Length: 382
Image 1: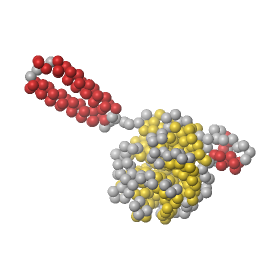
Image 2: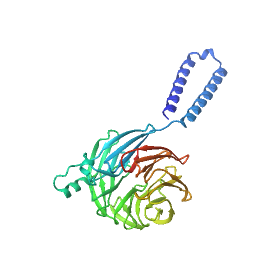
Image 3: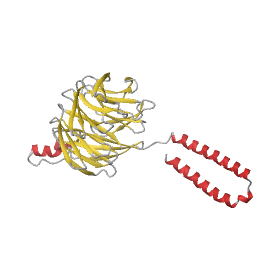
Image 4: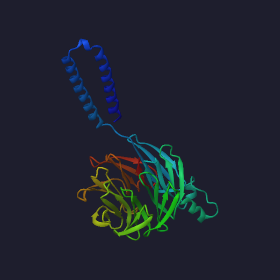
């Protein structure tokens, strides 16, 4: 695109210079000669633009992909296709994250580190001040990092064991699921109002509908989805979907909502107009996250399995048929997924082998596998 703009600017500059010269030499050329010269120039300009357009097919955009590495308390920022990475050390474990393009913030849910040797393994995390429970509460929060400087710029205390985070497109409303106390924290950054809303059992994944009106929360232990009206800040419906409801998602036209059913090995499809389940699609083993392409061609499901019996596939489902079109093998524990705005690539975290797969959505093939931190979980893109 940048090359196209440069070529067009050069052509326009040339036309202006030619017009100026033409005025001085007007007496030296006939009307017919002027017309012939103008037609030739137009033809040359069309040919040049055509060549630039064709060349743009090989032009690669840069994608900034952000990954939360849960077990080593870091966040990887990948610049693709350059493949350069920056590593950000967090003050706890990042369970999930999301980039908000409008505010240019990376929102991350932070939990206390766990493990037998957490003091040695997580030296960058808070030190215990003698009150273990109080220290734990302080570390359960959602934080925001500036995507350009990678500096922490905002922090909010939330409920117990924050899992997923999402924000409205304008970045003003932030929603966090609190798996430990069956609630959702809704933060209004414009008014500083913070509201806790009761939902189902063990709320985990959350996404906001394309019309920005509702948040759909996947409740893992009550096998349902809580629908919260973001204007009223209250649950307005609860829809039974199936066992192991782990994450939600939407088609970008707003027609469908999706729920990954980790136990049932299915993707539940909700008609958003009726807020009712209209279909269950069989996918791979232990599905977790899903993401729809922006061109409304596919919804892709990452099938994680378990650490003892990891799956390694993604299920590629056609949005026009709601049928699986292809199963593609990636790395062990395919968990988080995001798709670029141009619908060219899907990026998938492989949790049990510490990598991220890059999938070409035109070829429906894996084209790259990148090493990241330990236990890559959430993934998002700028």
